[in-house]
Image (tube, rainbow, N blue to C red; front, side):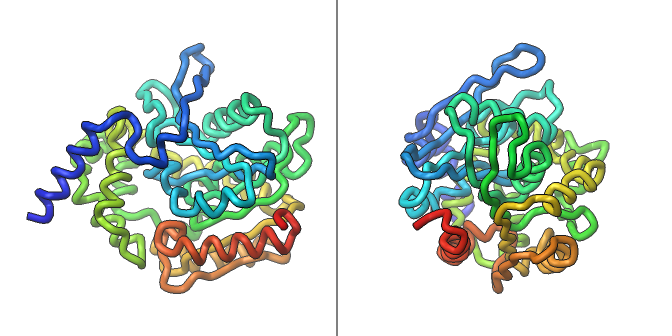
Length: 313
């Protein structure tokens, strides 16, 4: 009966307007032109103000909705900007592109340029951590000649170091030769089971239903096996992306839910080994999604960091 009710709830969500939640209604779409000259629709949400810009970058397989619990508090201090990366959420999910971190960084740069943003801060999670590493590798704190300057960075649980990252079974299966078949078998039930495994604190099923709706939007299941190849890309470009963290001279903090079976305490320890004067926060009884499991704790440690470095008053 419980599963039937949840399936009915998902069906209701899918019959609603293009905006799954009230939070989404404040967003808009940006047309990104790719290297083939094809327009790709990218969903953006922004709480515009004259305050410093904070760019929020989400993880796999979810979307910018990951940040909705922090959003109201963050608007007090920042001009907030987030987006659904291509292949995620409400953005287009084409089957004819290479879902590379370089492409995701290109899209973010295009959005920043479109909005006239040059200086910004980053708060990223999971897949978004590596997007952030690519942006740091390109621009560091100086921006070189790009016109962009990344003035501080906070990272949450993510595969910063391939040697300490443990993909779960579904990720390994999706990466395989028959990943497209596995993707077809992916269901809401499997999704909730995976979340129960990677998160120490339970996420309400009604909340997970919204995330699932966003994953399946625009036939997202058909490309999920393509997106998951990012795990191989992390290994290929490890030196570039680890060096980006090591050479970054602006304020940097890593907040880690240490009960995460994918990138938990081992990743925190590795960060402290490789990053000089590492600023780390260990969140106990917290898994892979700190911003969903313990949003107030994440907000507290982020705010302390920004106050410490006089980013906010």
